[in-house]
Image 1 (cartoon, rainbow, N blue to C red):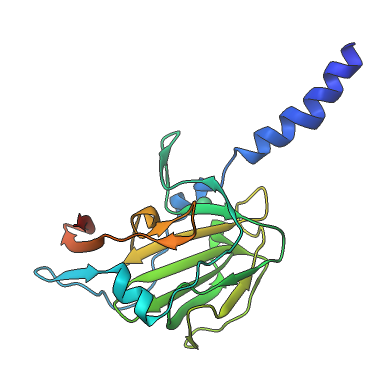
Image 2 (cartoon, helix red, strand yellow; image 1 turned 180 degrees about the vertical axis):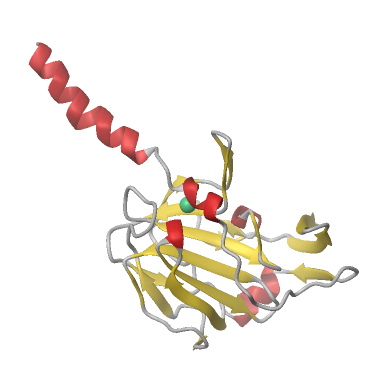
Length: 202
Ligand SMILES: [Zn+2]
């Protein structure tokens, strides 16, 4: 019986523990990219999903399930959403834009950041391999990278962020991670001290 319990702990509990771990540690090493800030003090940026849809949209990791959402946990900030399919699956660009970063970055591992036409940036990290270079123009659906576990990650997955002015905000405000679609509400983004404020507009 004792052997059976040990086997159960090793085979079931340990993988479950690993499954629930990390992923959110990358918030500690929050990326600063030296791209021009989109917003000045008195400006505001309106991001509307309908406009983004018209320009083309692809969910970055079709068929993925959710591992971990955005937000604080255990006193740490998780700067994005973690989603998973299988190792080396193709990660696709969400919208048209230009690659502003494609390199290894600390806990993020292999990381790609794309700046879109309206100033929104999307970030894709822990990739086993990046497929694009800085300065490359990309379309919605362009393969950006392969799903991996580089950097601080305990399983293959995609750590996905949305950013404006080098600041991350919850991608769940724009993306429906259950249905792999865009949400309907526009977002009004304004500067707030050193950060940004993001508000839904009905
Ligand atoms: Zn993550």
